[in-house]
Image 1 (cartoon, rainbow, N blue to C red):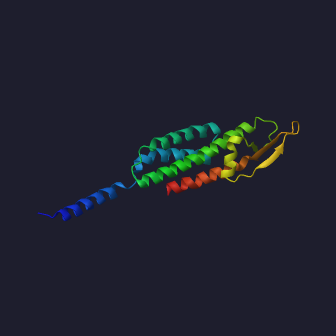
Image 2 (cartoon, one colour):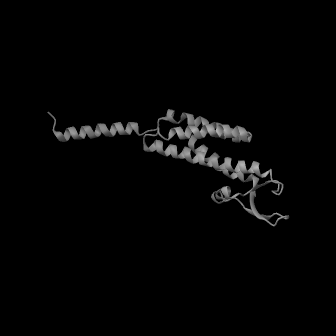
Length: 167
């Protein structure tokens, strides 16, 4: 008959082995998010239009949201955080793109500029976008803008995050 100390050591060893085996990443959990992220990055690489990007972005967002309750260990939580960070970067780019499209409707916004509405000012700070001050000649109203190509700064950050996920 084994002593209680030996039984305790065996139980702890078995518990550690089970935890070690289950502390990896179940790749199939993340397959939907991986494919959806690949579709979003593909849409950017192919220079697809706004509507196409919106569709693949929405799919990616839904995949990441679905992952929230599926992660079961620290490694999966870390991978989930990386997907969430990528989603937020894509969302920032998508929001700036939306305002880029919107800015073309205002005749007083010069071509190649995005009107810096209060809702997107945090993006200018977060991504260190160059801000330019303007004044509407007719009304004297002061306003600010960022270059339309500021989107490339956000898309490049997303590309780096995406590459990190793939490695």
